[in-house]
Length: 180
Ligand SMILES: [Zn+2]
Image (cartoon, rainbow, N blue to C red; front, top):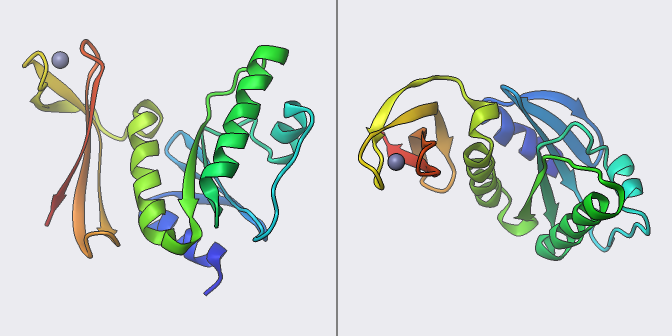
């Protein structure tokens, strides 16, 4: 099975709508969260002298979460994040993007963890519910349950329920999985 097809399967399993599929990338949405997955060719290291060129070439203008799949995803993700900071300092180009490193040898587990992080970071964008949640571990008031879903976890090899709860006052964001 091709990497891209595996990624599509994982994204669909998490409720993403697939928008664009290319040979080396996918764009997909989870509610208002806009994600892009980039499968970096094996021995390729990206290079852009101007960070704005990177943003154009990777087509990042409307993206919140960028998943970088590679044999050395940390180096490449760091490089991309540095370029995003340069774009901010040099050109006042402010994008609301976070970059998640996915090791190609642990594709499904890393992607699951990366999606969990993206859902936690972008809880406002993914939010599909607004309910009273559990007590905040910091102040004791009820947190707001912002996101809940159910998916088959590759890491735990079972179905799980997923909850994101937030206390805006304490800046506490909790991402919780319950096995069931
Ligand atoms: Zn609190």
